[in-house]
Image (cartoon, rainbow, N blue to C red; front, side, top):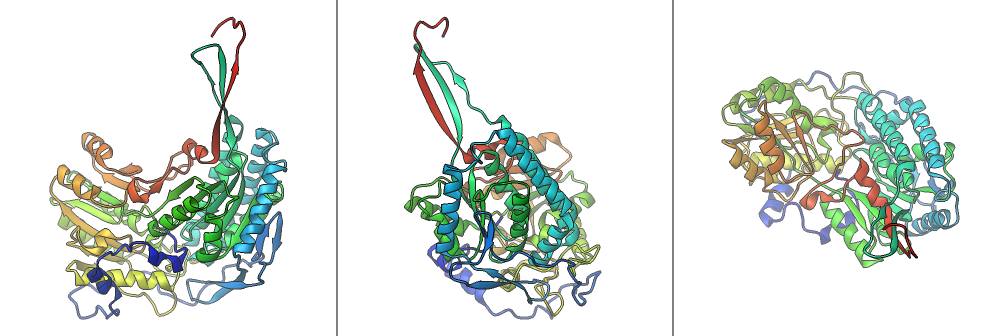
Length: 540
């Protein structure tokens, strides 16, 4: 789920808009879209003075070896309210020395501490206590998430926090079910495999789903008996610090989980290249993922799992119930302000229902409620920060300039904060930037197709392969598409179903490895073969 990390290093990687013409198009000054033949956007909820979040920031230091501590340098950085751009709190800024302190604590906790040596059942009980505490503090955690990130409070409190609790309980259930095998050998030998914790796990999480990504990474790592150094995104450090306090209240020993707030070029790079980190997991942009992989390879060749960007096709077939397809496609794209790595951002619609779909998609977008995410009934809050806000508006300008039809939206919403009108483009072509690049915002691009062979080829013609949506009443069509699409997840007549047991990850440049489900356990385990001779065995 793409996040901005290692910003000063990104120039080393290939840009998502590779041609100089594309760069020129994206860098043009944003001109008003008024005067063009488009419908004026209206919203059901006006932006008013921001509501009080109803929560205070109690934890803003680094968490190392079971204690909240200042950074070695004494530096702090501000975290901002995306509703207003105002400072919420000043957070300790971790750098290389702080990563060293955290890794040393994690190494000692793994090599000498009780966590990998206690029974798996005892680890499971601690994780279950943690889940109970998350549930107890649901409202405070959701409020911090909304305040720091801008996502609707109702989404954070009623959807994401219950999912987080479920993930922790799921992996608590796995803790005492991780085991090796006894394997027949050719000859008089006893052969067994051991599944051992990998050691110190470095984890870097993004800003779009801070707590959910925390759970996806911490859950399996702890269940397997590892220790952790986790770096939060600089935009959203608050909720992970609160959650880690609850984790230690549940009984996790000091040094097992350490949390560093800081920036990519300093803290992130130090963690990725640390010689005493045994495994690395990163969620963020594809360009940054390349840097993470390079740093890991150039240091101690630590294994890396990557969950990166996407440009997921959402395919609406000719037999679809158009009203239902419009609503699901709307959700697939606009959920979480469009800041979702698997967003259905290429909406392919069969030519027989295309015009009807476009009109209804436009109508749905115009009634999407945009406003203060703490207000009841709000569907869309602000984008994360000014950088993302301006990037999205540049892509909207690129869509207009390249000839796509702007059906609705396309402008800033309100005068304060990082709000953008829900935007819908029709007559989009595959070679347009809005159809190729990960915009990561509330911009729906609707493309037309004629038959399955064509849409399969076009849907697969991308460097990404994270997810896809298929909307059809014909199971033969569904089966054809699910097997042909080169993506890690295909949702049929649904979207964004994130059950704890469902593996998630991508093909191609959308990453490597899987998170969630049984598959993520292998990310945090080493397999050891143990062979001993047998003398006069009764059987082989």
